Image 1 (cartoon, helix red, strand yellow):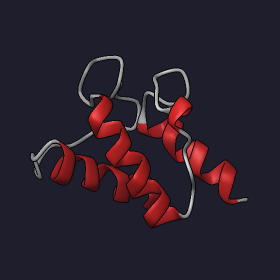
Image 2 (image 1 turned 120 degrees about the vertical axis):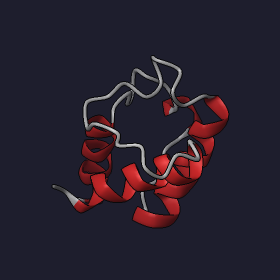
Image 3 (image 1 turned 30 degrees about the vertical axis):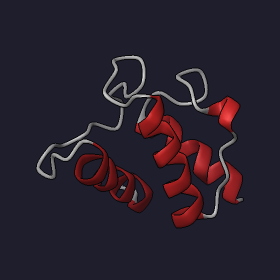
Length: 81
């Protein structure tokens, strides 16, 4: 399993959802199902910037850009190259 996925999954479960034992699947919809709301998206974008050095613009904080951890991990990897 990719470290990026593990780090993001742990952060979302623990910090955002306040459910440290919750397992988030790599293909689980986060935004379109309402698991993460718009306020959480801003926090997640700041976390991604601080942790991975990848900036996500405000206009990208939507399900079209990334709705699953798989899509977010891909976005991070693409921008780090």
